[in-house]
Length: 325
Length: 303
Image 1: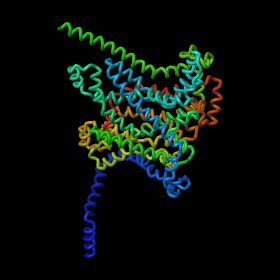
Image 2: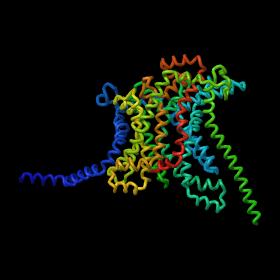
Image 3: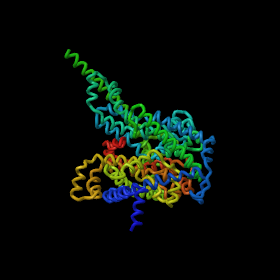
Image 4: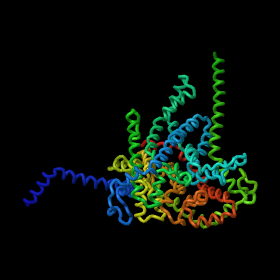
């Protein structure tokens, strides 16, 4: 009896929070029970998220191993930073990095502002039924797959069946191998990106414009502002928060390209400008089995992406603007 | 003075009309650029083989034919690919919708203990991912390679859809749910009977997104599926249209198919394949188009 009480006292003195923790444990159980149906609803989604997004994360360690599928994660030998050194010392890597950045920067320059301009134009249209009809057409290409878009490119630009080349031939010229010449590769990506995405990109800006207070425009008109002045001083400042958030989110994807688009447009003739990080990881990782090395490449991409998005957000906040979080 | 104001007004109106007309023409031209390539492809796909001349520019066939379609629909490759795409779309879409909506509903309840942790878990997946290879090794380790599940399961409950659904659920008036709770309904019943019926717009929008996503699956299919008989339509389309130009992974089956095609002009067969693969999207699109314009997406930007 005395022993027991001594034990009890000593436990309490050694760990004064134990009792509190036990109470908290009961809290958790009670909460779990009380909200059991909500947790039940969350469970499948949480499970998918943990299994397919979080369980692969420890798998990143194979970037520092000489991983083989037969040996598995635990028995593959450690090789430290060998893959990272290999990555940075490989001339291929710098070419791939340059190609990736070129495509992303071109995207930021051409594809990012295009929907803003189109939305500003659509917003000036008075006739609502006409506007709705146009929107229906503009959104459509977004729903077509990249295989379709690249197929259309082939139908228009190839030397075999391309409409443009048929027209050139009909006008007495000679065919141009657009798809096999590296100088046309980036312009083609931009045109495809515009065709597929410019209309869809307007949705978010049009919604932001619809949310602007009409009183602002009335006040501007009373002050004698014309159409251009209203766009410049009311509409554009009004959608700036949206623009900023989308820009920050875009920054995180600076090392990501659209795999399907680039992969489908690639061929042996233009690989020097067309190989990007994503396609390189697929080609050497999945099809050639160099899992450790390509995991290191993927890790490089993820880390840079994380740094970029966090610094873009930090930068926006430092300048007194609203960040994403 | 009064006359001046009227004159000024009418001149302003005239200028406004000119502006509207020019703007209308410009925007219509953009719309034409988006729609005409598809019209051209449809027209050529129906061109009769007897009048087809390679290297000649034709925009509208003078003689129509369904031969290209008959040829494609008869092939075993098409039936297999259609089966795969239908499975992905019909199984994947409702599964993804239910899982996403359920998780998002729980996340939308501020009083739920642990909500912040769950939300942080969701948000972090937007910032950082393990990359392609660890994900591939996981799917491989789970024995999902060469199954359609490898395409469906890893993409379920993505952060962006969750956040849009969550902010939509938060906009539903609490009183409706509270009334049901007083009547003794539990959260499952409330979710099923009250919340989901009020969520037709996001359900239709994301139903369309998910369905189109599964129908358009290409990347996941070439990563996870090596068995050519299990490839979905997009991979078949890529084989038919693009491999002749850039022979990357041409299976012997595809070579045989291409040789068979020599009888018909390849161009019409290729274009007919594009039309068949796109048709379901074009058919569904007008009906669902109204939903996603309703600002459902606005919530996504800040939540």
